[in-house]
Length: 163
Picture 1 (cartoon, rainbow, N blue to C red):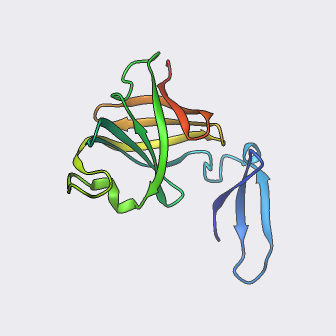
Picture 2 (cartoon, rainbow, N blue to C red):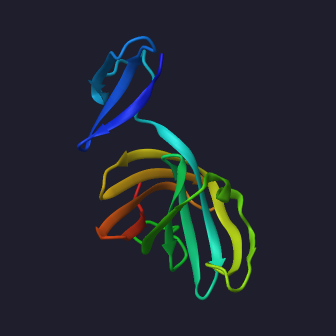
């Protein structure tokens, strides 16, 4: 049996069964899944925040999602208190093996400068749409519920939610 998640026009459906011998797939809205079945709403993964001293100091915020590291450049230190909002500019996805990168990118290369891991840990995805990603972080510095809110093209706000 194959179990996965399918996103369809902002509605989430669970793929409950897929037979390897037939094309039959059973879909049900996530809310109708009974408690004896897996909790499909609790997706999780790893996250990392890399302090990047390049031309300008910034923080690279990365979430393991869709088999890549979805990435945002955050010009100021990520929020540790509710009420603080930080600009987060979405940049190109990175390969998963970049999650542990620390070191120096040589002069002349894109992103030249020093990269240190500022925080890392796991996250639980609470909701995801084209405009809002809500998640709970469990890192050494950042803990609690956060959101990325898209307000214009690649510009997002990273904020810590009140609990």
